Length: 140
Image (cartoon, rainbow, N blue to C red):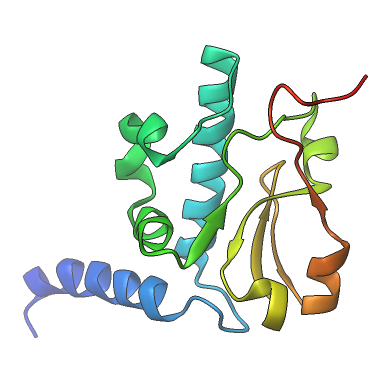
């Protein structure tokens, strides 16, 4: 194989791993990176507008930085907590689910916590994770 083809082949391999690797025991490092990038975009939108994004369309300017994650959100494979009432620190936000694989509640899987931490969890661990309150509904 010529050297000129290695770059596109690697990119295609990463895309295919991300699309088919969702739910595996060892998450693809590129997918984990894109989940963290998605979390950063979510928080950036919140910081600039004082509102959490209500849909993927609110993050349109950042789509290019998380294409595999975007595909999984659009296809329903990744569930996102839109309109989350974010806490003040990453440590506090990491107590709550920002996104998770669609089967994670029943089978376990990859989760993105609100502070940007990505973890593989069992169904039992998933059940113990907190849910963000919708923005505007926070008590206190």
